[in-house]
Length: 179
Image (cartoon, rainbow, N blue to C red; front, side):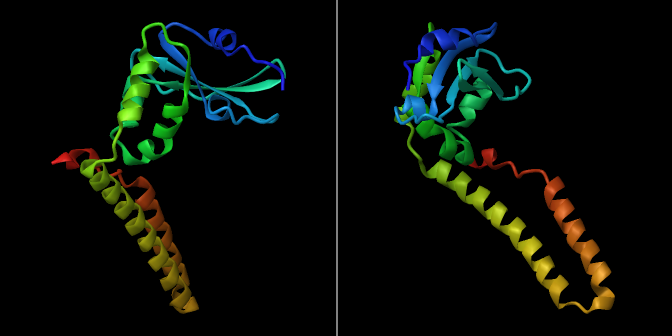
C-alpha cells in the first residue's frame, strides 16, 4: 500500500467553521487493508444544520468525510446508543489538524469516560422502549396469524396502525432521567 500524507489530505477538506480534523477507523487503528476507505471527521465550532456524509474519490482512494457539531460530540458522552458506537473510535482516532486542541480535548474526555449508573439507567430505558415497541408489533402479527380469514383485513389494518403509531411516536426523553 502506498504511503498516504494524511495531513495534506485533511487540508483538502478544511473549510470555514472547522476547528479540527481527525482520522478515524481502520487507518487510525493501523489496521487498514488495500480496500479500506479513509474516514475523516471534521469538528465544527458551532451547532448548525446537520450535514450529510461526503464520499470522495481522491488518488485512487475513497475518502469518507463526516461532520460533527459540538452538540453531537457531547451526545457521545450522554446518550448510551451514541456512546456505544463512538467512544472507542474517538479513543483510537488521530488528530490530523487540531490547532486549538479541540479534538484532543474530546479524545481525552473519551479516554476518561466511564459508563456510570446514570448512563446505565438511560441505556436500560432505551432498551426497554425498543423491546416494548417490538413486542407490540410481534403481538399484532401473531394475532393476524390466529384470526380467521374474514377478519383478516381488520387485523391487517390494526397491524399497520400499530406500526405507524410506533414510527410516529416521539422518542421518550431519557435525558431527563439523570435524577
